[in-house]
Each structure stands twice: as C-alpha cells, then as structure tokens.
View 1 (cartoon, rainbow, N blue to C red):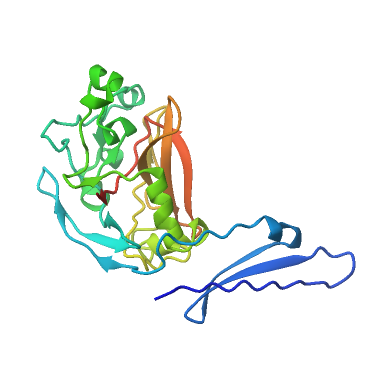
View 2: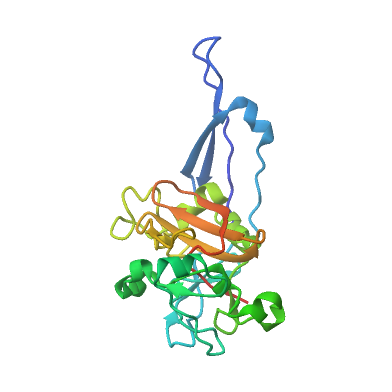
Length: 271
C-alpha cells in the first residue's frame, strides 16, 4: 500500500508584529500521525526523503538462532529484516568467547570486544539482552585483529550482520523519517518504558526496548527504561562510531556518534 503524505501550511497572523508559524501535518489513511510546528522561513530548507520502498511494513521474518542457542524472531520493513530482540550471545559465531567485563575501570579502558549485563544483573539480560562495546560489534578480539580487519570475528549469526549506519537510515526512512520513526519502533505502554513513552505504537514490529547503556569514561550504567541505544557497524573516527537511539519522551529515532567503549544493545540485520 502506498503511503501518501500531505503537507499543509497554516499561517497564523494575529497581529502584524506576530511571527508567522507553519505546521507540517503527516497523514496516513486519512489519520494525522504527526504534527510539527516550524517557522515560515524554514519551509524552503526542508527536504523530504522518499522511503527506500513504500510497501511491506511489519511482515514476519524467519527465526534465527545464535551460537549460544538463543532464538530470535525477525520482522521485515521495506525489504529490511531485523531481529525483534536484542542480541544476547556470549561468543562470536565461530565459537570464540567474548569476555564478560563487570569491573568499571577495566571496561573503560578496553580496546577489544566485551559484553555485560546492565548493572551486571543477569535478570536484565533475560529482558534486554547484553550490552556490547563497539569492538565486539566489529569482531576485534585481540591486538592482531585490531590492526588487521581480515582477522576479525563476526558477532551476528551466519547470514546476518550488525547494520551499518546507512542501513539504519533506510529503516527510519521507510518508517516516515527519523522524527517519527522511533514511535513506530518502540514497544507501547509503560511496563518497560518510562512514562510517557511518547507516541509508541510498534507499528513496524521492531519491538524496541529501553535497555539503557554503559558509559565509556567510568563504566557506570545509565538510562534503563528511558533509552534504547543500538550500535551500527559504521566507524566515525578513531575513538567513536555511529549509533541509533529510541527515547521515552519523544517519537524520533535519533542518531549520533559515541565512544567505542560505550555499552549499547545490538540488533541484527539479515544479509
């Protein structure tokens, strides 16, 4: 089914000295799904990106099992098949163990792959999966693999991979663009997400969870139930890489570059 978005410009002029304001309305199936107020002068600078494929939202995908025996469901949006649960594996897919690092100082100084549970609590792992540093995401397990990408391991199960930043963008474009895509990716309600869990519908079936994160400078934990952060495999510079984020208090799917020692959740994308 094609998605058609209508742009309505409403200029409010109470007095000649009052600033002009416009609103952008996004409609789907004759229902307004998002409203954004902007200044009139900003209209010319807005760029609307067409989704990669405007059809095929929330189509069930195949299950996949990791080397630890954990099985994940998946969902397809615009031809992109993502796992519906956060990764919870403790080994690279050739069986090489990934160290669990609980000590905060050790975590902050890592240059190779590691994982942890939020607050080192295994009960959190059962719900939110593991948190990984970026070195684990790209399979850096020793000094030699840090220097030579050909020696690196693979975190995702065979036939799957950790998405690039460009692939995350394809997903959010498919879901209407980053300002509203996050709402369609979050589990509704306030059982796991903190109030108000703004706009959450999980229309995409992505089933995004607020797994929090582990900080890079001190190894402390933060933001469980408030944010879900997901690594991409795309490097930004020598010390940071790109990630995507879902937020309890707005509908967007934010992106930014963060230190490689941060501990974030991981989703896998079918090759």
